[in-house]
Image (cartoon, rainbow, N blue to C red; front, side, top):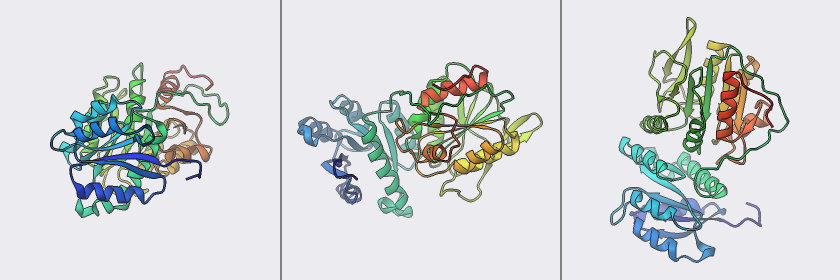
Amino acid sequence: MRAAEAPVRVMLCDDSATVRAALARLLEADPGIRIVARVANGQEAVTALAGLPAALRPQVVLLDLEMPVMDGMTALPLLLRQAPRPAVIVASALTQRGAAAAMAALRAGAADYIPKPGAAGGGLNDPGFRAELLAKVKGWARMGAGPPAPRAAAPPRPLPLVPLSGLRAIGLGCSTGGPQALAAFVQALARPLPVPVLAVQHMPAGFTTMLADHLNRLGRLPCAEARDGEVLRPGRLYLAPGNHHLLAEAAGAGLVARLSDGPSENFCRPAVDPLLRSLVTACGGAVLAVILTGMGQDGLAGCRAVAEGGGTVLAQDEASSVVWGMPGAVAKAGLARALLPPAALAEQVLALATGRAGAVA
């Protein structure tokens, strides 16, 4: 953190005093974060937010969903009416019910979610949980409240993009901040895509089921978790199920989905790299890869394989990314033909896939 930067202000809202204390220790171990309020339920959160002086108003509220007096879903719209509006990250149980509640919160305006880890995985002290939480808190504080608004961003150099004749598949990868970026991408698709879209979002089992339903409800692109052996059809989005790599396999002139429980890659399963490698094997250069916001560099090796095979790579720009790790790695390697926000990426993908592409401005 540079000396001129003020710490990110955070409110913790959880009915467990033990959890509040543990989260406070975890977050304040980073000098770039300051806890400005700790409350036990949604009603206390709404009251505290309205009463805090401007200098202490939180930029981020970490909101538990299951609490007495007033639960998180009831409190969420009340918190989002406050000015300045905080970014709300909801904390949910690592269960199917918790996943459904988290996706409902995203539809209601939450910026993001984080699943609470179980004791078997190290609980709140799990290093992966800590890294994800810190990235989301800092990322959404930088972005401001809610999902990023579409903002055009120029690529590092103007590169003409020509229609991709013979395109057979689109591979898409994302992680931290990905659910909202995926939703923005899907919502911006004004016309059906002529090829299948295979997507990997780093997410636990159960949560991917609810994310697929969340994206399907947008009504733009039919979406479901991929099933092993199913034929991949044009104009549909197939999401990798949690804890399984999603691969594509050639089947005559078409493609079928394969699910793998092979080793994690980049500490993830599902991971983006196996998907993109399988698409290059199945489709050669007739692949379009899109990398959205996320920590780490999963997708970098896969995008390199796509580019070396004659395919095309696009990535999300830094300004609209909650974390510019995955897309940034692709951009810094010189693989991305354009850097754009999710909605603009969707427009570019449509143009490339349907024969209406031109130079990126």
